[in-house]
Image 1 (cartoon, rainbow over the protein chains, first blue to last red):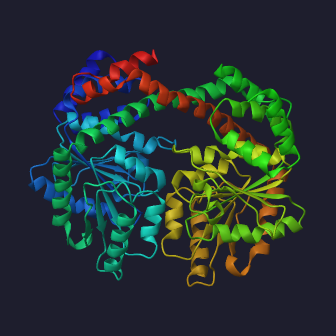
Image 2: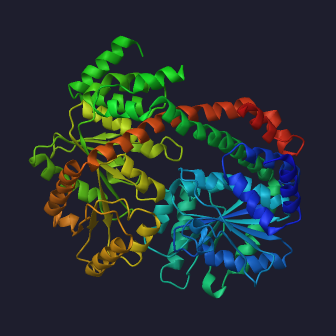
Length: 311
Length: 311
């Protein structure tokens, strides 16, 4: 992209033109070197937004909660954007079909965007930090990041969010699953959604016990809140505790430490992406179709070739 | 490792000494260049095993099914090994604690091994192909690969297995979840476990419809089997259809195509691992502690540095 059009893209983002934002996010989602040029220009306008991760199993009600949080946060004066990093989220309904931006008339100023998987493991969440920078440059100062509730991705949310909400539903074994997935240690606010269901109170106790057993470092004591997102019940408390967590971090110095970890992760991801691009090309260069056939019949040993390349 | 001890390790593996096998798998799980030297020596003895992936959501009964399959496959003359690529699997109970090998007296000849996550997304399943080569060199000719049923990992199982079994349980929405996760298209045999539960018959119909709608390529028509793994019900049919799928592929030429895709994925993973090792080191080299602080205060723009390194 020529300099002139990159400049005008940055200007469009700064003016909060939705087409420019959409184009810029697509550009930084791609692992081409071009994204680094765009990020270079956006950088001076970034770093200020408060990022909230919303994670949990499919069906826990993450999107409903997000939907309920938006008007309340807007009322508090935040300019809210949503990144849906979850292929099963209603917010990212059209993601795979290319129709990736939706505006909800009701909210006007909300920008909702889903990030598509880039086809590689981990690519999903690695796209978040650059997309956040675009939204920050466009003036959004609260970014809700809805992430798919599966394994490693849940844990990675810590590196893209200042506050992590874990959404659970009263269901036997859900606390145990969350513990196994390693998410228990990283959430800052626990939300037991669908709290009208049987077992919500017991789950809260189980969770409290698990947290105490887990031996969390002293400091923030994560609240466990009960909500019925569908009816808007308990949402005000979620907002209050979210913002309380932000305040606590800023006062305790945890904020800076966390931001630093986020930055390291972001930079490492960018470098990793660049290397990953090379992996495919390198594999094809080292092993052409004919060589693959030879390896399959056992006529050629592939590993010395990789060893040689490494040296 | 000096040549002599690498040679003796290979000899130990070939003699099916469990300590040598364990040590060799640990070595190839690690992304050091040493693993390539070991793989180079093992290669001539590899490529012959039939690899069966067993995937599905946590609690679906994958381990119980695996447990039931083992004696039946042994009876058919296979020398069976199990790789549990699932941190929540009972088979990998001790994985995190280092106690990674278990023998079940009842089965004697079965080698069960869990693969630990290497801490990075995707690292989990990338450890499978080298571990398979060790087991092949040790003479195992049927390898059951139990994989965690989450997102991308389920899809990757296609690249490590010749036949993929998807284990489901009669539960509302399970078919839809599997479709969304992209697993529906890649399974070769469907197993509805806990078939004594309500809804098993309906699930089978739903699944059949989903498969027909999905417009699978002509050829293998994946069976949908009902089992009660806990009681051993329906397991003989699973074995029969598994082996039928193998036969079908070998006769249709699909086998060779699939093996080639597996090989490409294996080689790409090895190259990717080597590059990933570089990413961390590179990030630290490009951005020291002082630079990170400058970036956090906005005094330095990090992206030009990465761009420059790319050039």
